[in-house]
Amino acid sequence: MNIENMTKTILTVIIILTTSLTGCLSSELGEQNQDRKSLTVLTYDSFDSTGSIVTDFTNMTGYDVTVIRAGDAGGVLERALQMSGVESFDIILGLDSTYAPIALDNNLLIPHGVIPSNNISLLGSTIQDDRLMPYDQGFVCLNYDVRFLNENNLSVPNSLWDLTSAEWSGKVAIPSPETSSPGRMFLAATAGGDWGNDENRSWSEWWRSMVSNDLIITSGWSEAYEVRYSGGYGVYYDGFIGDAVAVLSYCHSPGAEAFWGGGTTNSIALDVPASSILQVEYVAISSDTSDIEGAKEFIKHLLSESTQATLPETNVMYPVIETLSIPQGPYANNSIIPSTPTVLTATQISESMDEWLTIWISSVSS
Image 1 (cartoon, one colour):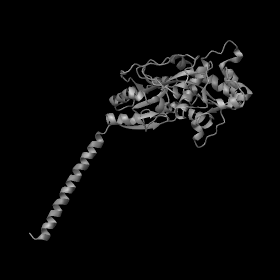
Image 2 (cartoon, one colour):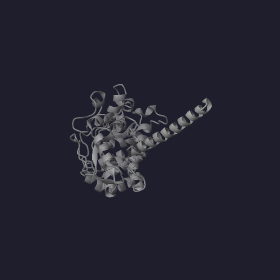
Image 3 (cartoon, one colour):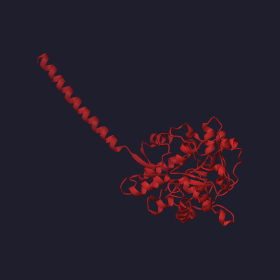
Image 4 (cartoon, one colour):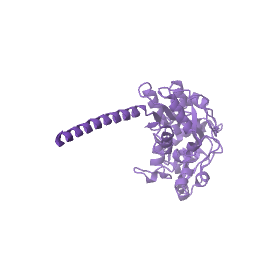
């Protein structure tokens, strides 16, 4: 065989071997990709899908996690209802005591079968159902910008009725209970709170008076807090308006502001009757899941001490396991546990919410 023919033969063998090896590698990679496990999580916009919670879970279990955002908790429920049997979710994350009963009634969830490795400790009542697992908590309440009080020589409101005065006209923002989970919890706080025996000073009359005082009603918490509230971090965002000096948020929101604000904040939680209530948020397994065991592992991960310890920063809520709380220092020093929260069972909220919403719509529309 001459050199030219030998060279051609060698090149042919190399090509055949390379093609064969490439085919094998492609086949192996394809098989590996097919074996790659994945979960889909339906949740609200503020869930930290790019942070340590999802990353750590992927690193520990090998699961790829796809996070679908659906606005507020109300959007989560709406999408779950509309897409049941059409779009597959493994985990539904973020329903609270006002929305979770609807998911239960519509058979959107299945028993999770998870036994937490840490004791669950809540600041109030929760739904007792084996399809729901609490994963964070916090008291809903009003926050106010203390600079407004100082500049206008105003006293701290002693009741919700003080917010109906002319000084507060057009200065209060509350997300609608029709579309917002904090809004629904606040509605429950007002409807189930103690207003005394004066029929003319009932919770529905308060809402009616607030609307007459140019109450700002927003579609969700983000618009109320980040766009309209003058005392929060929204001032750094494009589209900020800042015309509200009081807003519905959480009793620990000023603590979060101080935590990231160099130890100080202009925001203070308002502690008055009929204005605060505990919100517990749940994680659940969707009835459409194709991987129950993987979904269970995700719930266990959310309830692990390492994950729960991050919630005050990643989800800006209290953990639910008894050994943990929000960080000491500026966070804790500027957060309160309300002295007179409205106390309702999840059953009371579930059974009364439709009636409360009907009365609320009538009150704000008249």
